[in-house]
Amino acid sequence: MTKRDRWLQANPLCCDCQAEGRVTAGQEVDHVIPLWQGGADDESNYATRCIPHHAAKTKREAAERARGL
Image (cartoon, rainbow, N blue to C red):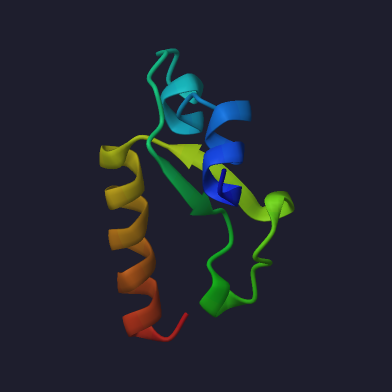
């Protein structure tokens, strides 16, 4: 079993959907603080997200990175 698989098994729900009052299975393990911003590559920096929420966060982060933030 991979680190990703273990994380999703222990944390199966999308954190963003939960914050919105919905229960949705997550499919992606996301770095809360992106690695390019100095985030750790360990469980202290992981979050489970559904595909739409992960895509939206990735898009926002790409825009920030392009602006040099």
